[in-house]
Image (cartoon, rainbow, N blue to C red):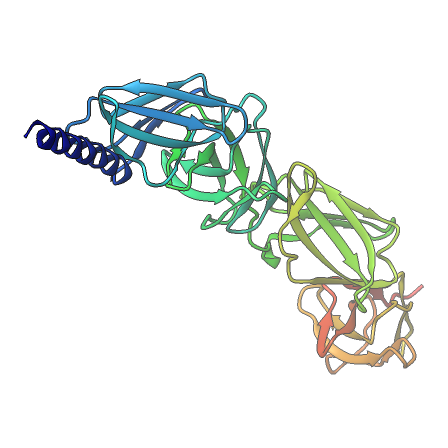
Length: 399
């Protein structure tokens, strides 16, 4: 009988050991692991309670040489002494005594806030409705968030080849102030940053192309071949302007750049030529200028000289050639105010007009007559008249 009891006891012990091994081997999963807080050198995680657990062993590893382990008797663990802008893999075991009741089935990524000591944000480009930012020097950042007035307006992951971010949905000719946050984002979409993890930057967008009524030739000194161009730039936030003069074939003849574009002097090139001119604005970015679209073209063609000779029977008007002109429109006035077109002279014809009558009346003594010669050209299929003319006045007087 005693022998039978001994065998039965051994059997119970074996069953007990087998049951214990089975418990460890089939430990439940720890659920709802979640990172809830972070700093540059610390991170906090939480998880669901495991029934019967006395404590939890939590371990972080960076996959290299650093491991951090803590034992806690609550479902929250805070790690300290971590590196800024880093990722760690978390594992959790739930214990009751020496028995493992549950474990994390998959490693969970824990991240820390990037170090922004050397963080720089610069504007590198601009459009009418967007700006491009360069982001450098935030240790460990792999994600960036742009906020305006406390609201997120843009976000992007950092690419190894280029740390740039384009902010879209803006308005043309506007100035914006952004806070650009450097972030370490985990695979579980936890964003590691704090209220100081940003750099502030003020940016500008480019204006839409300047309307033709906002730029013009403000004054001209025909005899000295001096012309003052200007732009009404009071409504633009641009840092500067460009004026470009081109031949009618589109070849650039002169490019002028300035910051005060109300008075730009062009000398010694207008007389005797026909040009088209246009303007655009630019914004100074970190290493380049961002340009608006060019305006539509305006035109100027001015002859070097025009002459008038009058006799008792006729008036003869002649003028010099204008390069790129395809013709000349000649107008006459008896009072210097109301002009009537006489004729259009082809560029291939002799540059002269001879009159014996003005507006149906014979030429009179002591009467002044006024003439205008306006150069004409072609821009593609469009016929273009110069904005300016050569004016001549003649008077028939007795000696």
